[in-house]
Image 1 (tube, helix red, strand yellow):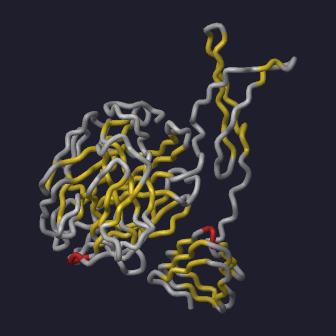
Image 2 (cartoon, one colour; image 1 turned 45 degrees about the vertical axis):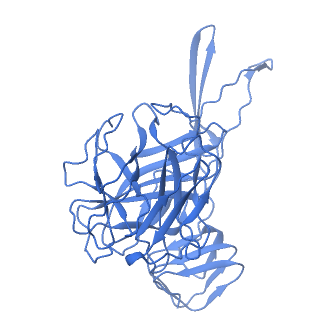
Length: 407
């Protein structure tokens, strides 16, 4: 992985496995997540539930790790088995990894208990880092939060705690965690796959309310994985935060649920980490060109640039000649063209939606004299009411009316 390894000496790629489960976790809960072999079982198994309509997942836990799989179990309150698909999952080797000269990520694990204060191998420069955690499977629907009343989170240490669905402290057999600097990185793994990694923090306005996080930079596609962990400053309303899908390349949505009816809100946050599953958006990757040809006027060398969504990018070139380094930057050298039309925003007249845009509508739309036409393959989700003259749907688009209605 570009950026360097601080303390983990295995050969696994740092973000080798990340994905979403597609099996029915009602009939198969726990579900075994199978992936390409890791070096060993020394990895953080992280998962986050996906919220659909009013069926929030309160607990997502891991169990039974092997080098090629681990189990996840998802539950609603009071231990009710979850029937949702699309939960987000990651396996990240334990260790401390440099992302660039000033940022890093560290993952680890803790043994039996309900409160832990992990000490980081390398202290962060400041407290601008996200904390993610997933408890091991337990009978009492456990969830893991970051606890901080102002003194627990410092540059070298933080606190995580586990609770059951009655908001009582819950002792579990263990918990996996990761801590990552806020920011955005374009990385390349050993197989040459480009990976976009982003992390940050977002406020929680209120419980059972869909919140939107705008990413620092667009993802290569809307097919990316997100981890979430609630940070609380008291012990009265620990919560679990769910992914609301589908996502856009520029944003994702989440909803935090407090099983025991707390109010949440002020001074409470959700930490997040988003990692792309595919695509080549790494424009910072260094490519060495060993062979040049003189064409009579200048030297030529061929390089392949990664894909990007749209717009122009600068090109930086550094040349070594007889021990001397010469560099030059050409502004806007690479033109990726215009961004594709976004059909998820209603402007005027009939609203023609391309379902492959995977729209997520969170604000009411009033167009009583115009039609809503949805065509193509993908998903269209709305948590707000859409008032239309007529609604037409064609193709294999899946329409989710998640608390909002098309009428």
